[in-house]
Image 1 (tube, rainbow, N blue to C red):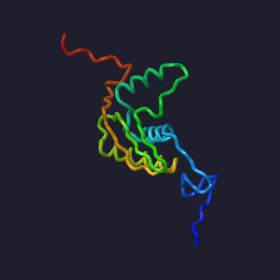
Image 2 (cartoon, one colour; image 1 turned 90 degrees about the horizontal axis):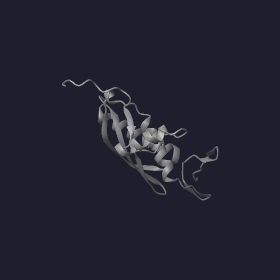
Image 3 (tube, rainbow, N blue to C red; image 1 turned 120 degrees about the vertical axis):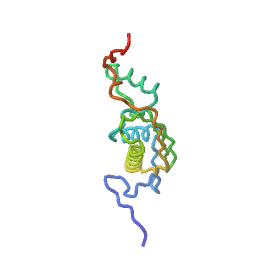
Image 4 (cartoon, rainbow, N blue to C red; image 1 turned 60 degrees about the vertical axis):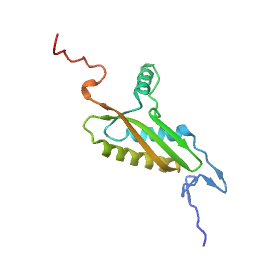
Length: 147
């Protein structure tokens, strides 16, 4: 007896991107956005991206009608069936980084595999900064201890 692919809403239940009826190509930017959104869902992730990317993102947010890029701090390589992801994170102070990275990695893998059908071969995480609440933008600097 052969296996049968059951379709729901026109989507193959087995998630195959290449079938005898045609192929589906997923753009890098799609995987990048899915990964960025999935990473931001995890508590303890303050922001994505390095210093320059965050600065550009902050400038972009000040432009009327503009929004922050969902793919900021995310780079991907996408093949026909697989994807690899690199993330740059800023974490909240006090959050255990190893646990946070494990949660982010799991959420990113699950989101990409469920949404795109691609097999995620790796998610590399670079924690490049720690957000300290007193360093938030818009707050007045602390009074100097010496004059």
